[in-house]
Length: 136
Image (cartoon, rainbow, N blue to C red; front, side, top):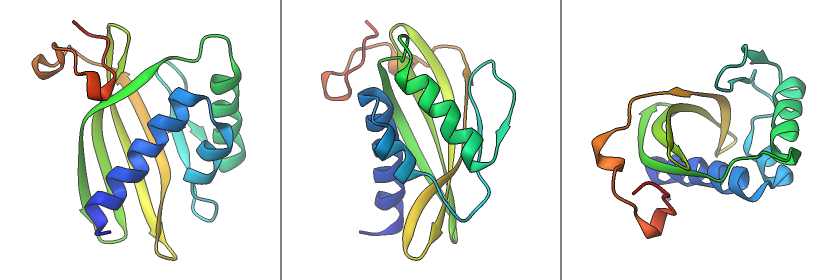
């Protein structure tokens, strides 16, 4: 698999794990050797793998873990680094997200995730059954 599809695959696996509340897969997707960070909407920046994984465990095991779908993901490659800009659809709410990945030992892993509110992009107004969108 070439780099761009591999990065997009990891990005989609991240959202699949999020939606499935699959902490084991979420943990496996994040880098272990590189510094990692995360900024959840409305939260302060979280740095360090243990703290980032603790935040995901709290979200994924909580009663209000969202039913989330990734839309319009675009991967940008910079050698052994890549970032994906995409939209997160949660019910009728849309967030814009950036996921940063690093390739190490031939595999891509997340090193940073950040999501925040945005205006509803016009291309997301119609529901797409393939992507599980709830917007209509």
